[in-house]
Amino acid sequence: MLSGLVIVLLPLVLGYLVPVRHASVMGLINRGVNASVYGILLLMGVSLAGLDDLGGQLSRMGGQALALFTVISVCNLVGLWWLSGRLGLAADPSRVVPGAPTSKLAAMAGSLTLVGVVVAGVALGLAGRFLPGLHAGAETLAEWVLYALLALIGCQLRNSGMPLRQILLNRHGLAIALVLAVTSLAGGLLAAPLLDLRASEGLALAAGFGWYSLSAILVGDQLGPAMGGVAFFNDLARELLAFVLIPLVIRRHAALAIGYGGATSMDFTLPVIQQHGGVACVPVAVVSGFILSLLSPPLILFFLSL
Image: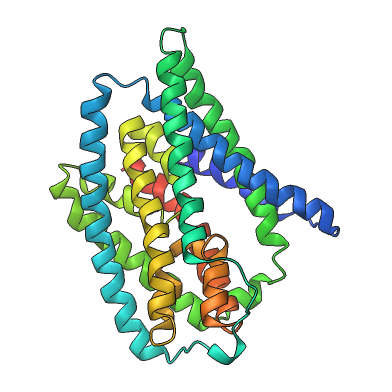
């Protein structure tokens, strides 16, 4: 477990040590992150195509992902609703950014594009399934792309304009991240017997906190491509539901709206939080997403090692 943790965290730490002073370089890093995510999902689709009885496996995978997502979401929403009543965090509609991207429909279309990339990978894998070593090679390449992604994300975190001290002292963001993490893990524990999984496997699946590209590869590497697919669809469904929830609840339950997006609240769902909750919600969302992004890799690897 320790060696796996070092291999995953090392690129994240190395990326965090790199200061970026030019906007053009930061733009290249952001595009590299997006390209890496698409590459990982395409390769994951190729790996899925190598499963025996693919149709039956996909049907089982969808049922497991739906059950896991439902149980975890109920736990998340109950915990974050409780926290919303105690934090006193409020959105500021008077400071909403009118031009901030993105519309709910456009945001969801972006997430559905990720599903399309996985489907394209499956089609590619089926077309070349008789090529020797294709599916094993795809899994190995996906791991290396993940390491590159982690390094780029570490660089993004370093250059987010928010020092670690400010992050750790933001009590709202810290509280939201901790409640989301605890309720997600509780949901994973409750869902494990329903999915005929060990408790540690349910916890590992729940510890992605919305970071689908990471959870899919780490879980798939240990439990097989089918369970990697369950992790991916569980975390992607979180993002899709977050796009629907944020505009509906952020003005009355800001902590719930910010927290439910999990690790994505610092990137993919952040524009929607900014648009509907105002700029006051942005630092809280970034802090919450930052903390969850740091917690996810070691927790997944720890639970997989049990």
